[in-house]
Length: 68
Image (cartoon, rainbow, N blue to C red):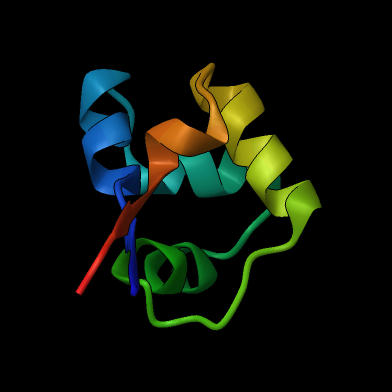
């Protein structure tokens, strides 16, 4: 089971940069990069909420499940 992070795609759709998003939600660019790459074990709901609020999207727009 694999969770895919589609944050890059949503950033392109919303015509915004990682730097703008990180600054807007109070997250370091390094931590946002780790989220985008999927190299983290989990994301706080407060962080997910901030991302979704800024990008005007749903969590399902950012994350998808890919069976092995």
